[in-house]
Image 1 (cartoon, rainbow, N blue to C red):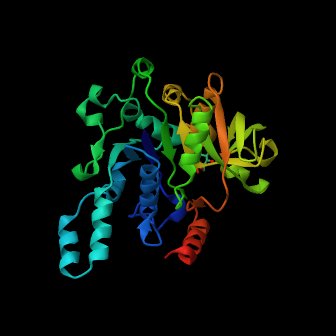
Image 2: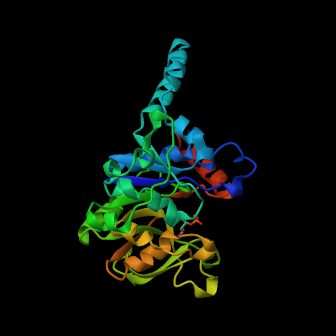
Image 3: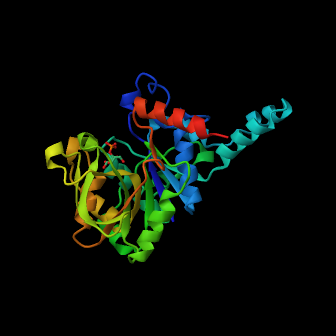
Length: 304
Ligand code: G1P
């Protein structure tokens, strides 16, 4: 199973800290936030983790590339724990595709379509994903709809870097729900105070149990009075490959961006979508300064 991590955003909320350092590399305790996300995907059984990034974020490629000289230096200096931490980060199986323009989350996910659909071999070499060790990002692929329709690959994960799940327990539960419902798509949702819903995608649907809903509608960043519930999409998706076909022609929506939420709305016409209501203590938002700080504080109290 593949995992896609969109990481091409501008990090505006953290400026000027993110002027030269990608938002995804800001630390949560001792690790960059995106390393938690990569490790979560691998813990959930992903055999390939694809980061969708851009040319300004070469430091992310470097973080996941081997640095043998630094490892040797740390070993010689009698610092084996740091040596191992550096070796581990450089050995994580990560590849990259580039999003050439910031056109929204839906577009970022679509940039990874050739990887998800197993078309890498069929696209030109400058649009195939680059490995971290190659230290290079690549051009965003444009996948003809006909090619997308011709294959029937497996579901894939999307993990947003604004959320970290240190216990790695969310994706396995989503996978179990998907399996129970014929490999349907599943999203993680969080109950939030109604004043906060306009920052998120919001679902409507029916409760099947205390934790699982069948989704009947979604809306991206609605005004409070139009929000269909207080359950918001919270950064983890297990998606049917058909979503790539839909993203190929999804028009810009909220904020003028191509929204993953809008493609999910279209998906509902032909496929089922389920939502797992997560416990607010299992996933942590690191997407605003306040929440990033609170997450660091909270995890520092539980760190070994
Ligand atoms: C994205 C999604 C939104 C979701 C949010 C948090 O919004 O479009 O539906 O609720 O992530 O997972 P963004 O924060 O990128 O504006």
